[in-house]
Image 1 (cartoon, helix red, strand yellow):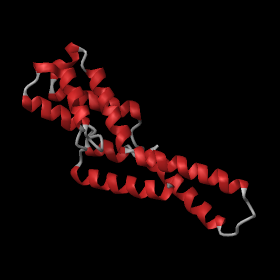
Image 2: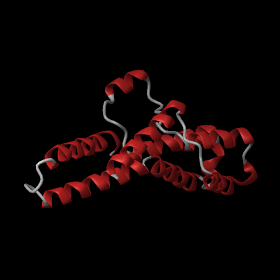
Image 3: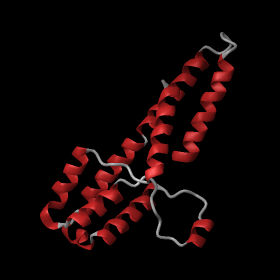
Length: 160
């Protein structure tokens, strides 16, 4: 299960990385329409949907700042960046208290994008727990434990 979830998660993220955005599902689009109401133009709506579906958060920093900043942004910085992008697309959102519900939709999209990796990590931890209980009983488990540990390490370093 862990290997399958890992492969599917990687495949999904690679597909999303090529386009740069995830398409919002129908219920997510309806939620955005409910939040925005008739106050936005179709262009503003399209811009908001694009920001909410971003795979990689575009930082407003210059290229020099990006070279200095080697560590990935945390969730709080991502949220600030998305707020800024939403306000640049549609500045009046701040006045109507629409930002928090839109950020909630964005967080749901992010959870959906990384769902397979989360399931993979849980399954790898479960596998390691079970194999630890059977230590010494099966000589082939060592190689599988190393593979599971390395994949967990990669998931934690890249996506945690």
